[in-house]
Length: 101
Image (cartoon, rainbow, N blue to C red; front, top):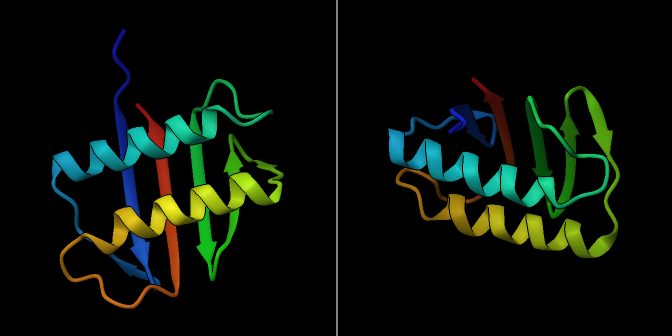
């Protein structure tokens, strides 16, 4: 069964509108990256907060601890993805919320 996702994105606490392609892409990339982490199985809700290279991930209400390597690779991936979007300039913080429908 194909999973459906509902995502929101905020950059510097400003809500970024997304078309369906961007929302699905963002959802699949973030869920895919996080499912490889220990303790992040069976994702129903995902919250990612990134500020100045520090990533905080919450899955189904539980915080997932990160070592430096996954922190850096997830942070760099998020900044690279989000910086490509229209109306996004200097990135201080990124907040992503994904709900499985």
